[in-house]
Image (cartoon, rainbow, N blue to C red; front, side, top):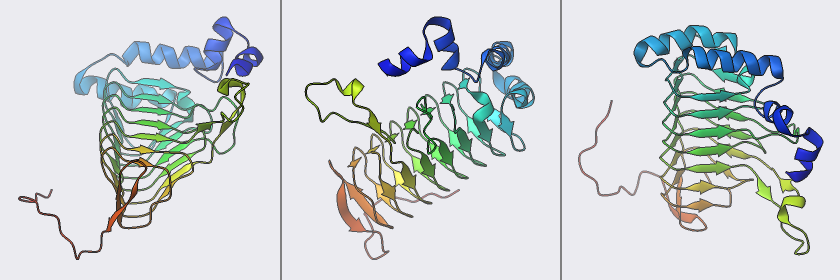
Length: 249
């Protein structure tokens, strides 16, 4: 980080370079957000659905609540029916953020690509009809690929980066990072407060229990939990948990 700051300069120039692709883009994006970003209710949602097309890619119509923060907006793509709740923060420095059709990003969630090292694998992609729960954090340095119908409960962390700290004579800040990436396939449910670490592949239909720390790949249709997360049981239809009335819709 310190090296990057030295290479990138300091002061206003450094700040702008961390917010947009250049002074022109920064001025445009900030002006649009100041102009209509605060407007509440469906009136504001309608205005932003029209005006924000000047700074980001929108397929069809997407709903953006007031009070969202968007940075490097020209690297953001929203599918038809996508929804960004109040307090959502998207920082999409290359290679960007893609949110699929019908996907909901709820209050306080942070999606930050954080690629200031120009890594080619960086980016965040979320498929269709997924849900990113309140105050969840997704860091995309190594690339995060999330499939369709994936639900994260509140306070989930999906962090595709690790610091190197092997040399005790040198600060970890000066030892670099690793960024292998995270893949979460379709129909995965991640419970509240769970953490998915860099390099992990969560296969289709898996469930991650609340509070788990996932450090290894998760097979398809398996429930994992604990710190570090371990398989608890297969989801094969033979075991059914005791529960009350089940609702649909």
